Image 1 (cartoon, rainbow, N blue to C red):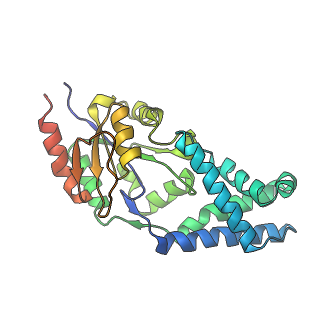
Image 2: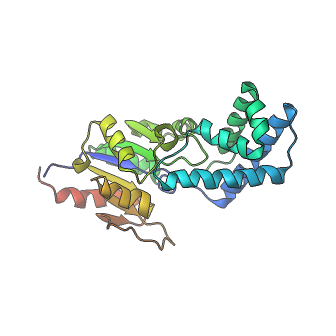
Image 3: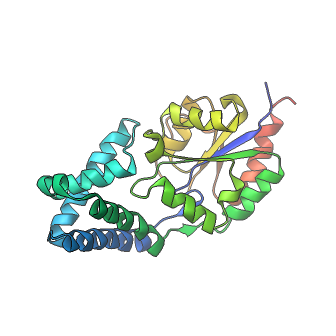
Length: 253
C-alpha cells in the first residue's frame, strides 16, 4: 500500500467558523443591497418580499445540493430574482443584475466568519510534514470567487495547491466527482489522500465513498455520526498532525 501524500480540507466549520452573529447580519445586508440596486433601477420591493424570495431560493438550491449538484453563483442569483418577480427578472438590464450579484457576494466581507485560530499554524505544519494540500468547499450563498479573495486576505490560500468550489464545479460534496476532480488537479490518487472536515455526510461519508481516507473534525455539540466510519477523529484542528502521523504509520513506505 502506498504512502499518504495529499490532504484535502473542507472550509466551512473546519478552517472557518461561521455563526448566527455573522450569518444573520450578512443575510440582511445581502437583501438590503439587492433592494437598493433594484430600487435604483425602478423596482420597489418590501423587505418581507425579498426575505420570502430568499427562503424559496435557499430551498431550491438545497434541493440541488441534496442531489449532489450545485447552481453556479449567477444561476443562484437568477433564481432569487425569479422568485422576487419573474417579469422583473426577465426585463432586468445586465448592469443592475451585476450590481445585485456584487452586493449579494460582498455582504460576506462586511460580516465574515471567524478563521479557526489554529488553521494557519496547522496548515503550515502539515505542509512541513510533506503533504500537498487542496481545498473542497460547498459554497452556499458565497461564491468561490469571493472565498478566494477572503482566503488570500487571511493568509490561508498560500497553503493550497488547488481550491475547488461547488458553485464553479456545479457539483457538491458528498459527490465523488468533486473529490476526484480535485485529486486530478493535485496529481494524486484517492488511495494516497486524506480528507479533513466536520460534516458527517459531506466530508466523512463522501470522502470514504470516493476512496479517500477521512479525518472527522467532530466539533463540540455534533450529534450526527457518519454512515461510514472515519479513519480518525479529532476534536480540534490542533490534533490533526498527530492523527496524520498515526495514520501514516499504518502505511508501508
